[in-house]
Structures are given as structure tokens and as C-alpha cells.
Length: 138
Length: 179
Figure 1 (tube, rainbow over the protein chains, first blue to last red):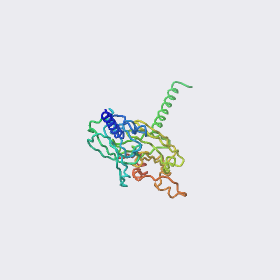
Figure 2 (figure 1 turned 60 degrees about the horizontal axis):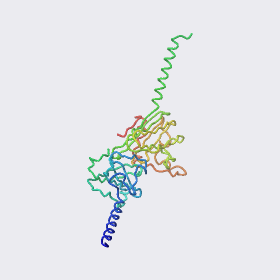
Figure 3 (figure 1 turned 90 degrees about the vertical axis):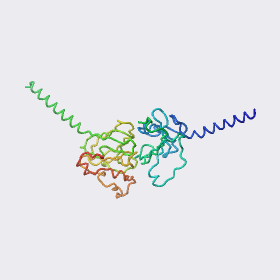
Figure 4 (figure 1 turned 90 degrees about the horizontal axis):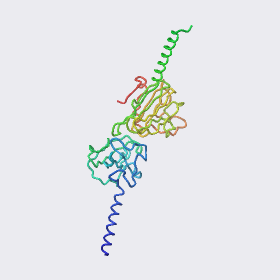
């Protein structure tokens, strides 16, 4: 009997720990959950951004993110990091950034001139979790 | 004696005046599109430079991305004064959806420089010349640093400075497009 109670306790602790580890990441379906907020509720951006999708971010992680991006079906399709050029030029180190927990399929990196939330010119580092061609983010 | 020809003639004159008036009103409007490529890497006002008559209503319309139309004026977050001293500054606030629009009627002659708040450092600026070019917008970007006392206005970012079309070109071409 004692062994059963101990086993149940260890199992409960394991489940709780796993949940705690996951709670820092974005859900694989919209909404992102945890500390993530819809970007459209934080700054004047539309809920769906053509080419990216619906963005969620933990405001404490701005500007780098990650921003969790969901397609029109509500599926997590990418994690986006936004790195200001001035930080890159200053050789600023970004470490320990969160990850979504989903598999990475491919990576895009491209310049963005700025937008509400990250007004400085910056680079988008997009970790795709699905084939970008199949993501419904048009 | 008032006969039918009077009414016909008077009516014709009235119609002609109305047509001229409509054309005058139509000529007193201009439209500038706010554009972007899909990555948000290239953002611009189209046309970026425009010459208009005093009294023209200029309408800015979102085509893609999120933008503002904001006059270079100390009232707008301490930006330097680059519209005529007696002109009213404006700030559209964020225009988020395609088709969202903002308009201003420009009555005071001179040069009006304006920017998009989230894209100023990326070089999204525009210039309108109303009638004869004059005023702070016709001066070098650093002109205010020679004033006494020197106002604590913001510098125009380098990328923005590079994207203003020259006043001479705007006056010559009436509308200057980015490409």
C-alpha cells in the first residue's frame, strides 16, 4: 500500500513538473496560454497579419520574443524572434530565449522596417513548425 | 422681358458654373497610398513627394501594413518643426486595416514634411509642397540647432533624411514616386 501511495505521489509530481515546464511555452493551438497575450490586444496591429498569422507574445520578453504565430485554423505554425538592428550592431547577446516546444521544419530570416510593438528596424527570425507552403497565413 | 431663352441661358450658365465648381472641388483633392511589401521590409508613401495648390485636401489611405501619418512638429513626440509655423500639426494615430484613411486640408503655403511613426527609422517619410515652397520644411534638417536657445527636438533619422525627395524635383514633377 505504501509503495502505491509513493508511486502515485511521484507520478503526480512528474505530471506537475512537466506542466510547469510547458507553461512557459506557447500552446500548439490558439490561444497561446500562460503569460502570452494576443499582440493585437497590446498594440494597434490586426489580429491576423498577412504572411505571419495571429501573434501572441509574453510582454516581458519584448522585443525579442518569441512571438507564437498561429494560422487561420488556430494551429501554431511558427515562432518568431524580433531582433533590433541596433542591438545586433551593438553585438548584444540574446540567450535563454524560450522555444515553442514544437519541431522546427525550416527557418526564415528577413528585415522588417518596424511596426507597433517593435518600432525599430529589426530582423524577423522565423522558426517554422510546419511547411510554410501549407501554413494558412495569407 | 423674361422669356424662355432667358431661362435656358441662365440655366446653361448655372450648369456651366456648377461644372466648373465641381472640377475645382475635384482638383482640390489628392490621395497618397501607404504601402508595404509582404515582409514589411519596404514601406513607403506613394507618391512620396507631392505638389498641391493651397486649400487641397490630402487623403492618405492604407494599402498594406500598419501606418500613421504624422507631421514633423514638436507637438508630435518632440519632432523638429518641418511644416509652416502657422499650420496646424496633425497625427492620424495608427491606421490598422486596408482602406483606413486620414485626411488633412492644407491651406498655408509651404513645405510639409511628415512621417509614419512605426516606420520613421526605416525611412518612411513624405513631403508635400503647398504652393510656393517656404518655411521650416525648406530648411536643412539641422537648422534648429542654430536657433537660440536650441530647442530639444529630435533629429530626423538618417534613413528618413535620405528618402525625402528634393523640393525642386517635387515642384518640377508635381508627384514623385519611390521607384
